Every structure is written in structure tokens, then in C-alpha cells.
Image 1 (cartoon, rainbow, N blue to C red):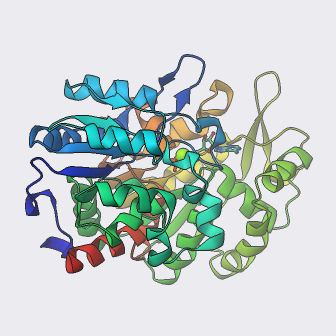
Image 2 (image 1 turned 180 degrees about the vertical axis):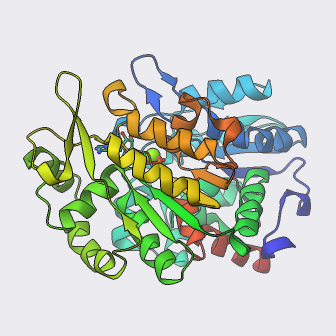
Length: 414
Ligand code: ADP
Ligand code: MG
């Protein structure tokens, strides 16, 4: 058993009811009812196909959007269509996760049939707030609605959601305490590639950290800097804005309100210590961009501005480019700005291009970061594209991921 975790090869799934947890969280277009990127679905589609081909009665569980990314909070109907097209088999979707309808549909499954249940985050027990505030024990997870209702009608559990492996949530961990469990093919691949990179990274190693998930960013920044894994951390997105605020810079009311409305205010205080300790390693933007009837830029020294800050500026891009050129390994999570809009995509596009241009080994992770990579057609030039963002970041900080821990437990127990 590699890494102390069972794989699909350790089980005969033929005729068995298999619960498969994947991460197919993708940006959605709610008006057209379609997905704007399908990278993650492509990643786990081979696992779905393999299990179905081997005769499993396959029940797929997944989440979409969250309380943080509410704009992407949606049902999984579009995903069922995409999976079906990718693997050339019908995929049934039902708008239920663990109620009587779901239970009856699972019991009716025949060998090889695939059923996709609805967004597990429609249930309170799977929400981020629930996870971060209540911190359920494994025992308590087995008593949640979804785990207690689905475990008795399933034979085994497989996780192919490396991208969500840092989440201590019931559908990711809970079943590892009730059913024989294994990791899927994508999980196996991502886990082993990242383990290899981390074992012997080429230095200097530069982290590029942007995006909106500041909690994850802060957890790892402290760790990778203290342990000497990272030589430089280049910041963008909300991560950089929170850090600039922590430095005492007045960003302007619109940006400050945005930070506090997103409940990120606590991180302004939290980042003061790490900034003080690693002043020479954490690189902050020297200029920023906003949208006022088109792209406008301002030096950080000239802040505050009335408009919300939505990107890093040209000068910052040049500074970061030089750091990236010096690096031997680059880890990237989180876009530099609101790259979804033309006026504020410059920072992300240029930094992504710089990473693609250098010979150093790059690992790029995170749903939106991968979406940006595809948008700029750079996928071929990146070292490794990881479906995980938060998971990648935590894994690299040397933390044992909750789902890995749960899988090891199951592999030892059942
Ligand atoms: P990933 O999915 O790659 O892990 P995140 O989900 O953490 O990245 O962050 C991506 C989101 O952050 C994008 O939707 C982007 O628009 C947003 N974002 C980046 N910079 C800013 C900013 N300055 N203000 C508001 N949102 C931002
Ligand atoms: Mg994201």
C-alpha cells in the first residue's frame, strides 16, 4: 500500500454500491445553465468511467460553490451532462443528496449505472462555516445526515477529490469511518506528484499567492516561511490587499468595506506578525489597478482611492516577473486580480505568462487559477496543473490533510 492508503486496485467493485466523492466545483454561468470550465471534471472522469466499466453501482457526491463563493453556489445538473459527454455513458442526476428520493434511487441502481447526487453543500452540515466553527469529530461526522443515511446502503467509499482534501467535511471524511475506503486515480496521481516535488524542491522556491481564500493562504505562509520551504512569497488578489492594510496603508473605503464585508477583517490583524517577521520575503504590490470607465492604476504610495482595488499594477508585474525568472520552482495559487473582467485581468495574465515562459518547474493549483491558465491557453507550458488550490497550499506546508488522515484510518481499519 503506497502512502498507507488503499486504491481502487485493492477492491472488487463489481456489483457493489460505491460512493465516489469528487471535486467538480467549477465556475458556472447561471443564465445559460452551463459550466465555464471543465478541467476538474476531466480530471476525475477516468475514475468514474473505470468504476462504471468494472460494474460498480456508482453514486457520485460533489459540491459546487460555497458560502464564500456564493456566485457559484448551484445544482449539479450541468455537471451530469458534462460527465456523460466525456465518458460516453448516461449519468443520472437527481436533486437530492440523502433524503428518501436519493436513498430509493441508490437502491434501484444496476451494475455500471451512474447516479450524480445534488450539491452536498445544500446541506448545512457540509458548509464551510459549519466546518470551521464546529470542528466535528470523526464520530460526530458519522452521525451527520448524509453519512448516517447513505452508509447503510453502500458497500464502499472512494475519494477522488484531492482538491478538497483539506476540508474536514462529512462527505469527504465521514464515510472513511463507516465504510472500506480508497483513493481514486486522480487523487493518487496528484498526491504522488506533489509528494515527489516536495521531497526535493529545486531552490529558490517562489510562491505566488493571490485569490480570495485568505484563510488558507495565511495558514501556509507562516509555515513555509518558518520552515524555509519558500524563499519568496509574491502576493496578489485579496491576500495582498489584506497585507497592505496590515501594513497600515489606507486602501480606500470601497476596498476596506469589501474586506470587512467578506469577514476577512480578522486577517488584517493576524498578518501583522508574519509581515514583521518575514518582511524581506513577503513581496507586496507597489501599484494597483481599478476600474473607472476602463482600467486605471495608482501607486500604493498614492492611496487611498475611492474605487475598489481589483488588480496589481504594471510596476508590480515587472517586480514579480524578475522574482519568477530567478526561481527554480514556482507554486501558484490564486489569481492576481479579478481576471474574469477585461479591465482587471492584466496582472493575472502577465504573471501567468511569466510563469509559463521560464524553465523552472511550476505547479499551479486552484479552481480559478486553472480557469485562468486555460483562458490564456497556457496549460501546455505549466509544469503541473493541480486541481486543488487550498489542498495544494496546505499540503505544501507539510500539514497532513484531513482527508488523507481519514483515508489512512480506513485503510488500517477495514
Ligand atoms: P483559486 O480558485 O485559484 O484557489 P480563489 O478562489 O482563492 O482562487 O480566488 C479567485 C477569485 O478571487 C476570483 O474570482 C477573483 O475574481 C477573485 N479576486 C482576485 N483579486 C480580487 C480583488 N482584488 N478583489 C476582489 N476579488 C478578487
Ligand atoms: Mg476559487
